Length: 638
Image: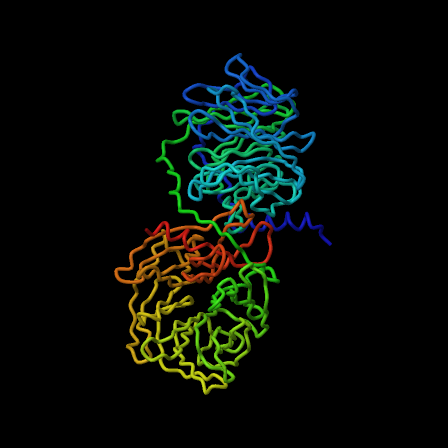
């Protein structure tokens, strides 16, 4: 039987054969990397830093960390440091990070030459989660977060949040744990594209996503011979200004310039170093200078690399960031389980209101306003759920929840009594073959209750829910269509309008009354910028006479607010990010959402946005719901 390690190597080779064989050949023209030249400094790690037009040298050796300008020492810190990395903060300062290898302690310094204390220790932390092999910063201009990756060599990495929305955290926070290859040796991040590169010893280089809420999928960049060009163990990585990559092999010391498509542009041997381990970059006037060092503290080698003149890659535009202030307990099963939320309002005590959430594997979970699971109804695979009020059941006043049941393509009904207890109220059969999304409608004209339910084919059916005082019955009254698969929908009871999300294309508007025309109008289109397929959850909010549509844009892990009346102008584009103070992670891959502007009790007196979190982190566990107070959204709408 093959060992796990050999099986993994075979899988890497298979991937290489499938797509990388042609991309791994060196370009004939090459990239103009000059031969290495020694510097008059011995260091295990070395950086040349430009701040406010002046050059400074930052390096580690056997005695510790040292910062100097020419022969003038500006600051030093004793210790046995490895994996020195830096990130310019502004023109006059830079952030430094290194590991003390004796104690596995992380050190962070701020170097500001003009300050009274040029080298200032800002944080020191013992890392107990893993032995750290490498460090790399990530500054997200789009999500306004600064984080640091701690790469372990035994199949794991941590992402520490250092700063959010220009505010430094009092204590770095682990916001993500990554599964990375065993024997990972080096990392680097492209701050513009958000790509995280990880070297797997002498076997491969992989590309991940650096955003903490992003998908953890990976792609292969380079692989070892005979299918690629890697020969030795990769000990360091650096990203060039054009997005290409430098990879430093340890023994024999060799520097590879790898283009973004995986092709090797040039390989340069470093014969002056028996073993190489440190790699840093300095950029000036379209010229990149690489500094290569060794743990043996030999003389640092300098190489110049002139890149073709290319258009600057602008940073991504910042997106408004909101923070959740409450989350529910996680779903009991890991994976894609939870889908759509709804709210039941307690009429007299809003703090006793409830959150309903579908479980696509088991049924319906009910949570209180502290996020605790208080009821479970194992009725089958429910997809979407909605709530309306005031319908007789079992000879008493009840409210109603309806959900789409995928087991038998039916409507699963629940009666909600005055205490908030849900009761199984039976099912209504449909003609659908792949039941999917659902929403409810209470007609202001007739007082009747309806359920809109759709099918993956694009068919939408409208059922009237009637009562004889004892039980509920459903009657099909109308059918609608959109061109391709829909899911999320919401009905405006006040105006008699139905909004339906056609996942890959548009949001549609229909008249909601049972005797209205069946033709609809596409009012908001997927634009690939703000609204990115899939269109998932859709909800409606009323505030001071204005009506808003809130939509989850699953393709870019964001949310949009539109006017719910023509011309349906976009009012806000935002994301839901980490709440460091409460230890709640951000939100991504949202399916369903709900919004209310009625009180849900303390902390949500003006209502809340409730969203399903497809990747529940801090720690990694089953999906859950996150709540954002409505005023956080409202302040951006006024």
